[in-house]
Amino acid sequence: MRRTSARFTLTGAAAATAVAMAVIGATTASGVTAPEPQPAAAAAAAPIGFGAGTTGGAGGATVTVSDAAAFKTAVQSSAAQIVRVNGTISLSSMTKVTSNKTIVGVGTAGKITGSGLNVANANNVIIQNLSFSGSNDDAINVQYSTKVWIDHNSITGAKDGAVDIKRASTNITVSWNRTYGQDKNMLLGHSDDNSSEDNGKLKVTYDHNWFDGTNQRNPRVRFGNPVHVLNNYFSNIGSYGVASTENAGVLVEANYFENTDDTYHLGEGDSGPGSLVARNNHLVNSTAGETGGSVAAIPYSYTAQSASSVKATVTAGAGVGKI
Image (cartoon, rainbow, N blue to C red; front, side, top):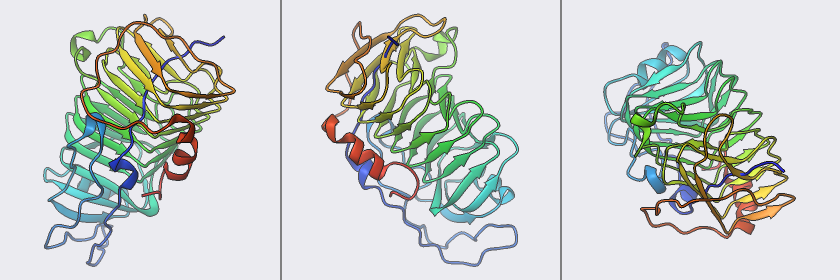
């Protein structure tokens, strides 16, 4: 039997997020719409879980971009900014995102292809309602960063990870995303040798995501404690669902596992075991996995959706164009 690992799901504000798309102004030849003279509405309601309090570019100018040059200028600005993506942005390499940014797709038109986004040494970033495909690296990489919300994206075909979070990053919520066509899905903590940076960090909430046929790392966790895997839908998982390793503490709560032989387990590859607590999960053609040890208390209030109803909720609400 395959080994298994755990996580938990949150409900609440993320389910009711709404994107404000009102931007007036002429689009320039450079592919960027001039900032509004008055601030536009924030991209979405506030996240729940560890990423609560992330506001992104709220209060800053709003620009709309439709090509890579304008996109890079906007997301690398030193100012707070809401960056609306209206079209396909073709990147050749990982593109840095600076602090106090909201990057949000317009309807279903916002697409990132060719490479991905690197949230590095940044604070207060929202990435929302974008379709990522065919990255030559990760779709989204987060390192040395805090207060990040990754929400309602669709991700497929990244050469490495869909969403990798590492190097002392913390206070992050990953919610309502659909990932598919991915081998390595979501890594939390990149190396067994990085405990000096990662202990006490890597606190992440994975909430209402749809792991749709992804093979492994849903997520694979090192050091983070607690990590909350809540109300996610795991369907047709290939190798394994959740792995808790290297003294991590993972709560896998009220998730819906379907056609997943190895739902969750302790240890993975050369990485030693962490702790994993599983509770109130719903299993369909799936087997309860390996648990053990204790997990630190979740430090925020939340309401877990009944696991049996998670499939319907997540398939209706996860991914692009669902906010």
